[in-house]
Image (cartoon, rainbow, N blue to C red; front, top):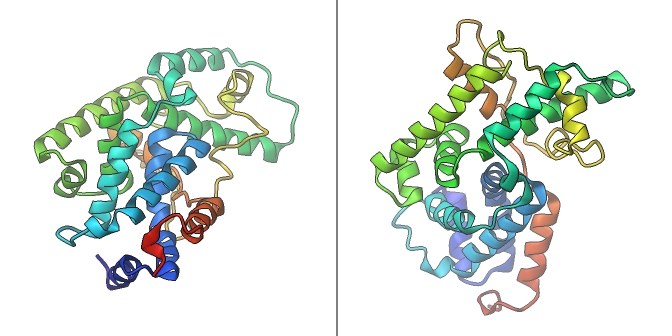
Length: 279
């Protein structure tokens, strides 16, 4: 736990509302990114993030610094996300569904009559939406193991501690997730294997016609993101299909929590509903 976060935790425990708001601001992006990659939709991720942050704040007295604060926080987040009701996107997500859409795209339906910048935006939305759909197609426990390992780059030991399972169990989940994702992408996705016919631009007509991509409600391509890390989709020509698939699936930006999340938490802190902030 960094000294700055540690100080904020101590002050928040003492009822300092300013420190509580600063603590939320410091941790909300990681929580949101975990929720967004797990659930796949912005509105659901925002709601889950708010509930996770509020639960962490109101149970902060239970944090004994026996593990890293982020580990404690992510345990709360993982428990919450594993219980979260499946949304519509997750309910319909499957490799079979994606494969059927890819097949329709191979027929080269007519591209919408829009300007090239809009086409480029929709192609990026297709890429991000499709790779997220693949992640949603694996069971949630495997999905979270994969996200902790591939997106947040946690070691097996750290991820297992967050998941409250032994290292072998986490690695087994991670291996199953990688095998399923890599195998499907190696056969279908042009990002993972240039020999495959699927191209994001060609999928725009199908994706927009069935509602997977909504030009009036872009979920991914225009989402607020951190500028601290580059996420160019650089796949070396000599990379194996498994490595290329991992690059494509990880190739989402570092999403940041919308301003509304902190605003909603601030309103709750100031509401007087929780005595811990009355000091």
